[in-house]
Image 1: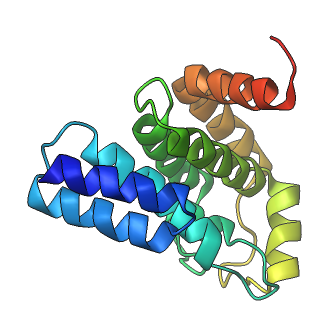
Image 2: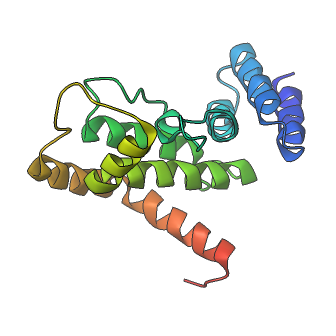
Length: 174
């Protein structure tokens, strides 16, 4: 039954019905949470669903929603963003999940992570989208540099692979 639901979710995803695909994958996960790759597929379908439906105040895709974060959470730090990024990458990486939905999800997750961990691009994104943080400054630059290095070490393999996938799509050979 779970495999049939996941096959049907794949058909819905191919047809561009991302909410239905996500709902079917979630149902399959509820029926059998230990089924092969059901958690991974559910995460990948969630990313595509969020990209299509969750828009910010300016009508663009909400990068915080892609990572499943609340932009108004006062405890949101670079560490939180990095750990969320690594968890999602481990779920949807094409080496773990051989599905076309995984490649797209990884690309969107990486874009969100790159934007939200770079202090200047995050600040620009937040100002453009009306996100204000009550805690004043977001984080110190020394802490940011250290955390990004640690995050890159943890996710290095996955980051290199996602760049290779994007390069292949663009026609470059690495």
